Amino acid sequence: MGWDGCHREKGISSFAFFKKELGDSLLKLRVKGSVAYGAYKDKKDNIFAVVILMKWTKDPYFNFQYKVMDEGMGPYNYDCPADILDMLTAPLNQYSEAWRREQKAYRAVCKLLDLTSPLEALKESA
Image (cartoon, rainbow, N blue to C red; front, side, top):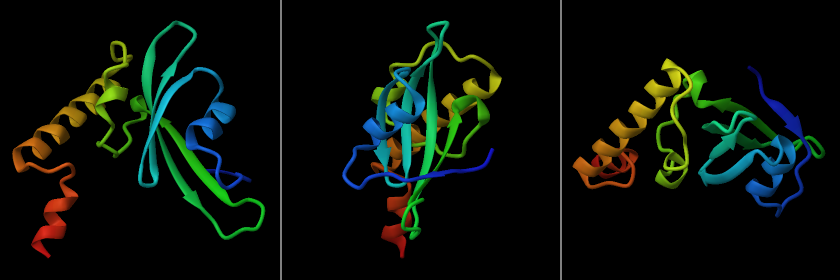
């Protein structure tokens, strides 16, 4: 449940980096700020979402840290891009199903407020 630390060369794309770390089962990856959302295919051909928290560090060698969670772990990140969500097969458990419901609710709020992100509302009210 912790973070992994490693050396990541500057300039390598997040998709290329995580494809090397997670293998060819990573089908697609989209980055939003310090969070990456991916579509991952298991050995039974289930495709589920992975959420990867990322941060660069000041360490000269171990300069990158990341934490990988699948949707069934209930990550509190709800702005997964639609093209990733569209790739997913049926939810594998109740937690995956709940996470996907939260994605839909997030999108509904954004649409209602005519925002790409609810955080924009906070910026506008400040």
